Image (tube, rainbow, N blue to C red; front, side, top):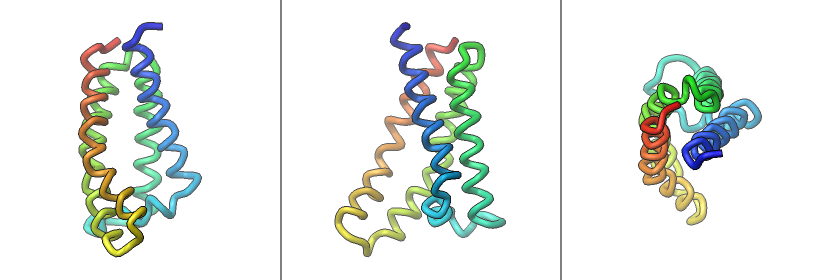
Length: 123
C-alpha cells in the first residue's frame, strides 16, 4: 500500500469515526451548533454525521478520492464556526475543558492541509 493510499484511508477512518460519533453521542455535537443556523441542532448534527460518513466513503474509493478530499477540506473549513462557538461557550469551564476547546481551533489547519494533500495525490 502506498503512502498516499495509507494517508487517504487514515483520513477516511478519522471522518468515519467522527460521523459515527455524531449518531452515538449527538448531544455533544448539538451543543456546538451555532444558534444562527435555521432548524434544530440535532438536524445539523445528523446532517454533518452523514456528510462525514459520505466523505469517508469517497476517500476510501480511489476513483472518487480526489474530489472527496477537496470536499473534505471545504467541510473542515465549514465546521470551523462550530469550533469557535465551542471555545466561546467553554470559556468558563475547567482548564482541561478549555484546553480541549481552544486546541480544536488550530487543529483545523492541519486537517485542511491533510485533506488538500490527499486531494493532490488523487486516485
